[in-house]
Image 1 (cartoon, one colour):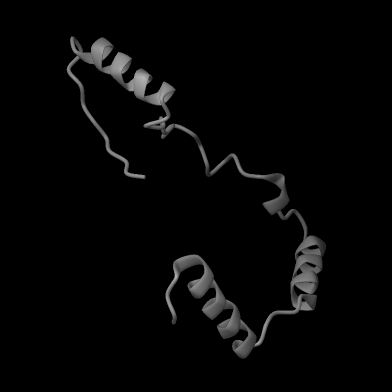
Image 2 (cartoon, rainbow, N blue to C red):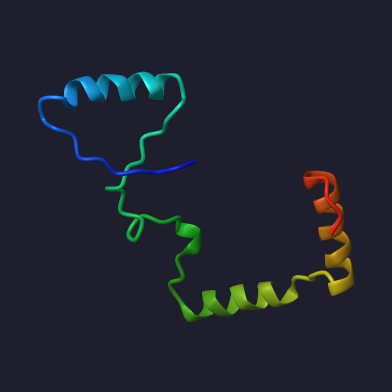
Amino acid sequence: MQTMNLQIEDSFFPHFKAMIDSFVNDRKVQVVDDSYDYENNYPQSVVVSSIEEVRRRVFEAEQETGVTEEEYNILIDKFFQDELGIQR
C-alpha cells in the first residue's frame, strides 16, 4: 500500500474529503493517523521496570531453543516453494 501527503486548497477541501470518504467506505484507501504518539503509547508488555525483570526476560530468552542452520534452510526452501512457487 502506498502513502502520500497532500496540501489541498481550502475551498476544494470539502469536495476532496467527500471523495476520500467514499474511497474509505469502499475500502480503497485507509486514513493514516500521523498524530498518534507511538513513542509514549506502547504495550505494557514491552515495559521493563526493574533489573530483576530484565534478568528474568534474558533467562527466558536464553532457554528458548532455535533451529539449526540446516533446519532453517529446509524451512526457508519449503516456504519459497509453497508460498512463492520458486525454488531457492
